[in-house]
Image 1 (cartoon, rainbow, N blue to C red):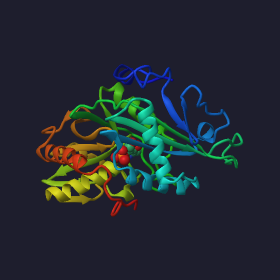
Image 2 (image 1 turned 30 degrees about the horizontal axis):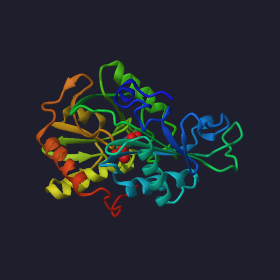
Image 3 (image 1 turned 120 degrees about the horizontal axis):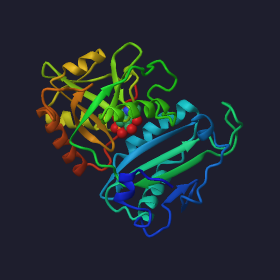
Length: 308
Ligand SMILES: Cc1ncc(COP(=O)(O)O)c(C=O)c1O
C-alpha cells in the first residue's frame, strides 16, 4: 500500500500498531491491507460505482459521525446502494483506528462500492464491498492559495451533492492547482456561479457579509460547512446562503475553505492575486470557534443538517 510521502513520514505502516501493513476493515472483518484485495471485477474499480466518507478523528473518536452517516445514507440512496447500520460502521472505524495505533487524530475513510459486477454500467447482484481505512491526518497551513478552474460542476447532474467515488474531475483540478503552486482548485457551476473546491466548501466575505453558496449550486453538503454554520450561530455571525458569480471570489475582503481534514482554512490568494487579508478577522474568529466546538461536541446532532 502506498501513502503520500507526508503521511508515510508521519506514521509508517510499521509504526501503525506494529503490523507489516495497515489494518483495514473489509466486509465485517479486520485484516491487513495486503489481504483485503479488491477484485478487478468490483464495480467501484470498473465504473466508479460507490460512495465514500472522510472523517477526522479527535481524541480517538470519529468527529460528527452521525452527520457523516446521514450524508452517506443520502449518497447511497441516490446510487441505490445499501449501508451497514450506523453502529456497525462506527465499530468498524474504532476497530481500524485501534488496530493501527491511532488513539487521537486520524483520517478515516469509509468506502462502499457496488461489489462484483459485469464489465459495464450494470451493477451485479453480489454483496457490496465495504472498506474502512485510516491514516495520519495531513497537515494544512492556516491559509492556502486557490485557483479557479475552467471546467464546471454540473448542478443538474444525477451525482450533484453525492459523495461518489467518481472523483476524476477533482483529481485533474487539484493537479492543476498544485502545478500552479496553489493548494485547492475552485469550481463554478454550469451557471457560472461559485460552487466549491475539490475537497472543500467555500465562504467569502463581501461588504462585511459572510456568504456561502447554496446547496442548489451543486456543492456537497459539507459536514464542516454545517459545523461552521453552527459555530457562526454560536458566535452571532450571520451567514447568507446565496449564489454569487465566480468572479466575486477575487473581490472578497476575506474568504475561507471548510473541510473535514483542513477544518477552516483562510484563502490567501485567488488565481495568483492576493486577497486583502488572510486569515481575515472573521475567518480567525470562526477558526477559533471551530476548535472550541470540536472540544465541546464530538457528535453534533443531525437536526437541521440538510441536503437540499
Ligand atoms: C467535493 C467536496 N466538497 C466539499 C467537501 C467538504 O466536505 P466535509 O466538510 O464533509 O469534509 C468535500 C470533502 O472532501 C468534498 O469532497
